[in-house]
Image 1: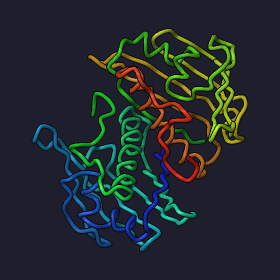
Image 2 (image 1 turned 90 degrees about the vertical axis):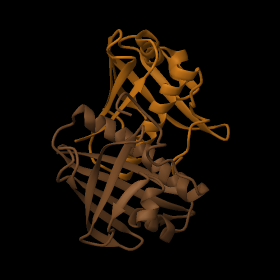
Image 3 (image 1 turned 45 degrees about the vertical axis):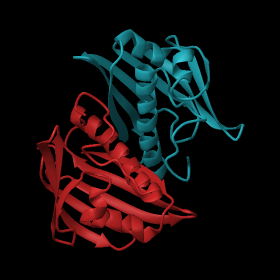
Amino acid sequence: MVDILHKVGIKAPLNEVYKALTTREGLAGWWTTDTQGDGAVGGVLRFRFHSNGVEVGGFDMQVLALQPGSQVLWEAIDGPAEWIGTRISWELKQDGEYVVVLFKHQGWQEPVEFMHHCSTKWAIFLMSLKSLLETGKGAPSPDDVKIDNWN
Amino acid sequence: MVDILHKVGIKAPLNEVYKALTTREGLAGWWTTDTQGDGAVGGVLRFRFHSNGVEVGGFDMQVLALQPGSQVLWEAIDGPAEWIGTRISWELKQDGEYVVVLFKHQGWQEPVEFMHHCSTKWAIFLMSLKSLLETGKGAPSPDDVKIDNWN
């Protein structure tokens, strides 16, 4: 099994970064504007993506664990076959003026082309998270930065 | 051992993408302006990075293999300890109007924090490569997009 790893450092208060990962409004500000559901432990967050106004897919994430200010853990329970059962882990820590976010998308079965795409796309969305918190404006889908023929 | 994977799609001629990965001038246009050395098979490319005008480190890459228009393979022979002996692989293929670049940085011993940083940073530089080829302007170091407390 193979993992996607990323790191960003964000100049913003720790509790604001945590809120952007755990509330519907926060998540909608950097990942996808169509974010619904329940961000509490055991709840399910529903992320949907649109292209030219048409829904083109998405992910359902069950919230497995929350440690305020330090950890968020999701499991993908619906979405593309390659994602089902994978886990997305967010670790937060203060380092000087930065909140460091260590991101892991763990448990991919195979390093398929879709995994390459998702790895780059996660980096783009982490930079959108950073931008949301540092400037007040993220770039969530459908206005996300496009990287390739799969968008 | 763990790998960094990425994908971008670039709307540019295949031979231009290949040149941006195999010539000193091309590499200096998206990764670091201080690129020296020999891009032929067996040659060594020397990439150096600067902050406030001071050299802060870099990488020496031996070119292991070249397949014009389809593959570039480097091995890191000098640089940070975590990089020595790792391999950077670039696969190119045409897919409709895009040149798809599949990137792999393979052979990390451990998924350390530095690997998280490098994974995100590679995504940033791949987007710089895409920008160079699509707009004529990349964002190589020292004018690269900063991601965290390690830059």
